[in-house]
Length: 109
Image (cartoon, rainbow, N blue to C red; front, side, top):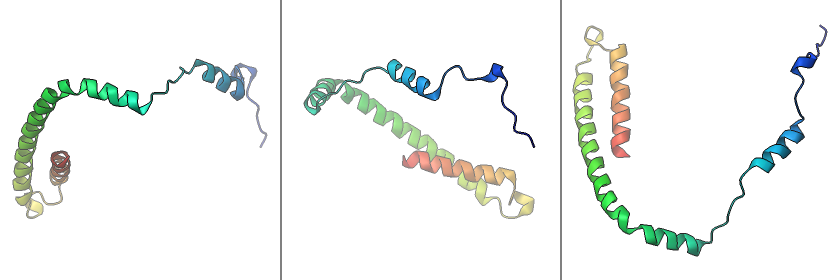
């Protein structure tokens, strides 16, 4: 077969090297921060997160309780899948197993 060359309409606007050079010039300058400055910045912002941390813990505990309910209900539903007539090997059983796995992983996280 004959190798075709792309028409002039599809020629690149600039070379890869020109693209990389242009991209480098557009990148923002990075600033170095010393570890001591980072420590001071975190020390200043610590008092506020204590309240947020307690609220976050309470919210996570509530979510864990909800997930435990979902896990219990899913386990009960899966225990009913005893044979083919009762959903064994069905799409619903697979979805329940997936829900159980996801809920257990979320709760443990």
